[in-house]
Image 1: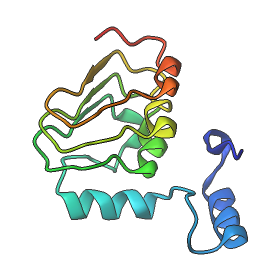
Image 2 (image 1 turned 60 degrees about the horizontal axis):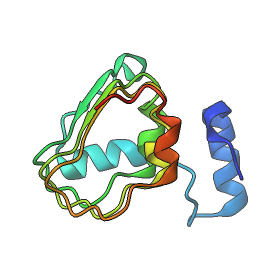
Image 3 (image 1 turned 90 degrees about the vertical axis):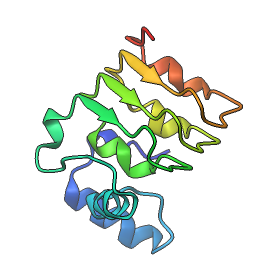
Image 4 (image 1 turned 60 degrees about the vertical axis):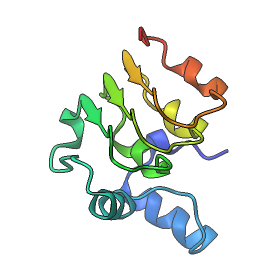
Length: 123
């Protein structure tokens, strides 16, 4: 398995070349497109400073893999009142400093075991 947490931009580019267009390697371009397409409020100018993400009532049906690129310092994630059916384990597990997680009013039927990586999770 590829550990993306220690990769820089050039590593991402090299991995994309190796595996081709169908890659699941996240990129900032993917994240920027998702933000633009969904209209969520996420400032990508200071990704290290993102401590809260509120995507409530955003008509989302999933969380993109590219969120792993900006999840390191996030302490609060709210995705209430969407149509999310599944939490990708690799995504939710990347929120290592997460303290508060709000999921109510979605269609989630299973919580991935990777949520255990969110050791600080309180709510």
